[in-house]
Amino acid sequence: MREYILVLLIAAGVTYLLAGLCRRLAFRYNAVAIVRDRDVHTRPIPYFGGIAMLCGVAAAFMVAGQLPWLGRFDLVEHDTRAVLIGSAVICAVGVLDDKFDLNALAKIAGQILAAGIVVLNGVKVYWIPLPGTIISLDDATSIILTVALIFLCVNAINLIDGLDGLAAGVVAIGSLAFFSYAYWLSYEQELVRATTASLVTVVTVGVCLGFLPYNVHAARMFMGDSGSMLLGFLMSTSVISLTGQLDPSQIAVEGSGLAINAYLPLILPLAVMALPLGDLILAYVRRTIAGRLWFQADKQHLHHRMLELGHSHRRAVALLWLWTALLAFGVVAIGPYGQAWAILLLCVGIPVAAFLTWHPTWAKRKGSHG
Image (cartoon, rainbow, N blue to C red; front, top):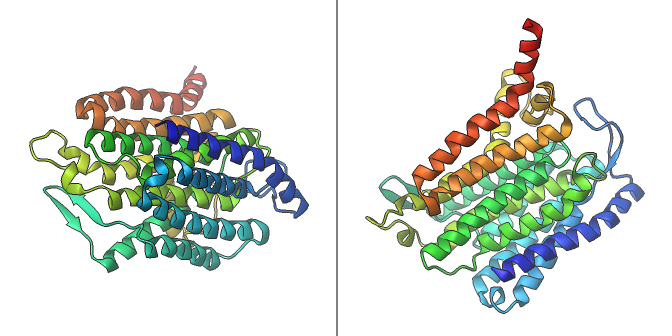
């Protein structure tokens, strides 16, 4: 655990120190977010936060490879090298988009290229747990499913990056929850605790924490597509890599009381990504019904609706962080504490979060009737 903490601190420190430099480069090369109708910021803000994040990822991976414990696992080193190359590709695509506003097809091609890099290096979905059985995937199905998952996660995080600090906070919370699960599972099942999933998630938490001081409201810097697509890529590859390094037969042991854990690798990503994926699905349905393409932007995302409810910028972000933490850690709690405690946590937390979310609307209605 000490080495994981060190890697997290390195990722955070490098990202924080380089963010200021990247901010100046963004101003120098005019890579700034202009004010558009669908935006909530009122002045141009520099991009290139993703470049600082990528440097944080690279530094953390390089240090991890030299540590006495993390550095001795060849599989982890091999997979993280593939993830780093894919991260560089998708970050480069994002930088070009931030600077030149690429069309949708160019961005999709870059996302698929990055996904293809990790797939060719063996970071892919190998099995799917279903009730009563575990399905091993053939190569074609594995490749298609892996690329589709990466594509969905990348675009989900990209869409939710609409308020200062929102995407970085949501990803940090979700990655911390997934790291907790991956580390606990390795400990509980007496498996190797050094996994690609654990390393990538803890590095993701680090780069998010390092970037947040520049990005919380009022933001001095945006991560841009280079950062949001990078974070989505890191989250998806960490989840995917878990299926490649854990033996499902060791997780689901009949009569052990731990059979539910075989399904958590399938359930947990949905909980961790519930807000971004939910926003992505709603956007697709909403735009399809309106006769528009799914990638045509609008101002009806979850974060926009939070502002319409009457929340301030900071409060809207904090509430969306709360929902992410509640769903992610609520599902993670199934592992060490059992379903009863997880259900109790959700039954208590969801009403509280719901009240805080819709309280401004209820207060307005009460005031108007008064």
